[in-house]
Amino acid sequence: MELKDRLQIILDEQHIKQKDLANAIKVTESYISNMLNGKRNNLSESLAVLIEQAYGYSAYWVLTGEGDRYATQSTNLELSPAKKRLISEIEKMSESDLNAVKIFIDSLDKYKRAFHVTD
Image (cartoon, rainbow, N blue to C red):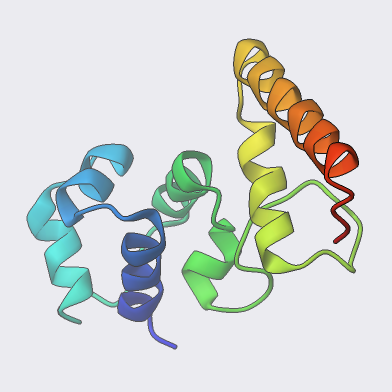
């Protein structure tokens, strides 16, 4: 998989436009366009780290296409890609956002108990 393919995955999964990615990593929209069109085939490590910080994709995966797609601090190798991505997003949350997520999880648990829902 080429860099342009990995960048397209990021745009598609995040539901963002080239302009949004360009703003997040502080480059021009034409720079992103050139990468997506295959005119540029390399990305600096510092830009890959900015993508990791902004969207949770592993800088190593962005650069090479190898390893886990999503950056995570978890050492649990059994986690699905979706769980790894959620962990990555949680790691970036503020305390107030984390409290809101905790309230949602608690309400989901109450719902499951009330309606005898099992996974």
